[in-house]
Length: 500
Image 1: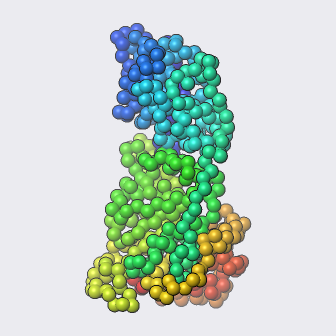
Image 2 (image 1 turned 30 degrees about the vertical axis):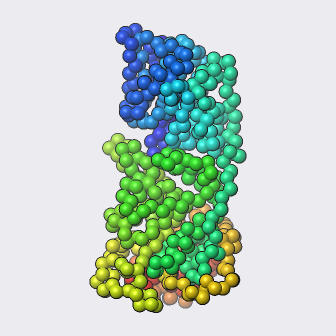
């Protein structure tokens, strides 16, 4: 007897279809699984055997062969437990096969038959919904499955519930996703809590409006980290497509997806001891790294020079392309990585170079060695270089506050709207052709830019990035043309850490 149950594997952002074929034939009692299963998949035979026995089903006496097709696709995780168990029951004629048509099943089985949640179910739901397949998932995965509006999803808590559905005794209810399961309320830190630092706040607003990368440099305690943590709060709300992309990346990550994070801009802040694998992703079965988990959000690298140089160099390509490709011998996995980089560093090893109290005792060679940890090509890819000095103590005695995050976010939203009307991309992602079309300078501004390139020894990439920042400043004003003062401010925000 042969039975076929549909499910899906997970490789990168993809969820290829897997047909779980179960054949029951004569021979000594045994169960073998073929089709490139990993160790966790091979162990499912023991979980399935115990789950069937504890659910009062008969485990068939005979040779059972489980084929996970296609055979050349690696399979991992416990998601195939439920389809294997159903295949065994159909092959042994304990349940009918008719109800399994055009339905996909996911779930790890406990020894008692309860369904446990699986990781990476969201990309599988998206693919299944495109084919109009119905989906059965563990109840714990329902909030995640509810994010896909077109999906017909039925939750189940136990193997017996699924079997009762297949036999028609208690059919499961397949219904469109209920998005109300994933509409949390959350609050970002308020920008008004940061006293002083008007220049840094202005740079943060420009970065948010145009999607630009940003480097803060200043002594300890000046407010660099506080400013960075408030960037997500002034970014525009995520679109449904962006929110679904972000949730999908979280779903396939080690931490999994949390329903309370739906629609929230991610803020990732890895420690400076993070490896290249942790930052950009990878592994035998590729997983997204921090740059992909920060997709549509913010990647904050505090103490930037303390990161290993080869780790930081891995950021150069995704900063330009917005994607990261993990190559393996047989396959490639591509993850999106359109993040906003915000970095913070001290001006010297002790952190107090240029402090008005004269506390720095670092030699010139020590300062140069410290700054040399950051390569020129990486710094050239960061749009804004901003000094964050120690705030004036008098600022903490005043009762007046600066603009709140809500006020700044409203200005940012208007600037982003002007960019959408002009072209489909935000200013930081303008192509060279779009740059030439939308960042035309007046003659005086062009002359100013040429002088700046000559005196500051700027590269062609730096010129393009200055133009993009100037375009954002003009959008915030608002102004259709890039004026001299827009360009002058963009050049001022391009100061390298070595000049601070």
